[in-house]
Length: 120
Image (cartoon, rainbow, N blue to C red):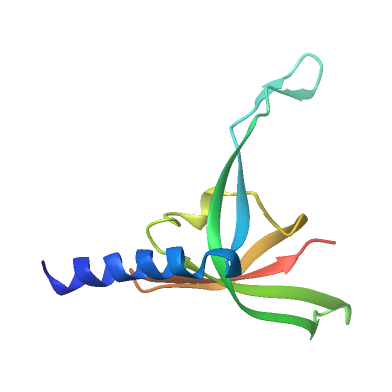
């Protein structure tokens, strides 16, 4: 077994071991909707979800944006095999609250580190 496969196997084991310390993160993906030009309405908008285990790395509620308002942020660690393309998800639910991923998204092929800002 090569080193890369061994490391990926150990990362999966770590996420299983932490069990109750991990957080369920729900990634919501909106399927393309159709637009009815006659009624000027969006139709057939469906949302599919994927639930992934993440480990809370850092939580910050003191960061301020350009309008000087407080932003709640969370940084989580994920198995990189569970997070393929973060750009396809429209919203993320952590602890029942909606968040958006923000740059930079770090992924070394083993662990993905993603910071999320709470939506207002």
